[in-house]
Image 1 (cartoon, rainbow, N blue to C red):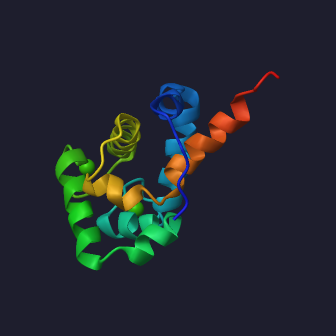
Image 2 (tube, rainbow, N blue to C red):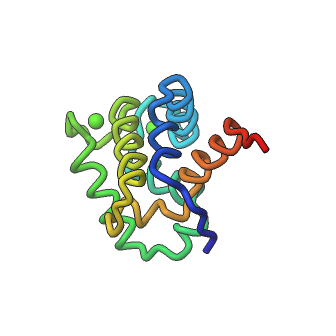
Image 3 (tube, rainbow, N blue to C red):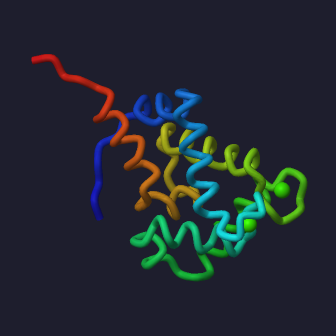
Length: 134
Ligand SMILES: [Ca+2]
Ligand SMILES: [Ca+2]
């Protein structure tokens, strides 16, 4: 497993850059919403996470993925229609990023995502925007 050192500012800067974060969330939402109805079903989220986190999904027992989905919908499906709309999805992504920033381990969502590209995206952004004067 590849580990990179990411400080909390890497992640919070990424989330706090609203324009950038919005397009990041929109991009993900569009990719995961495979039937294009503007809502994410449990199946779409399950497949989406598998698609973007091949390593995590591969090593992830099925039941664990289901409990992650349960946790996500309990916490973020505000109108309880068993679908995540863009705003609910954005809350989820924001929560994930801040949880990562706070360094919370052991949260099922974080465990499911820690191998994923989410963090890498923040890292890549930092590398792209930071310059190191010699
Ligand atoms: Ca959909
Ligand atoms: Ca909903």
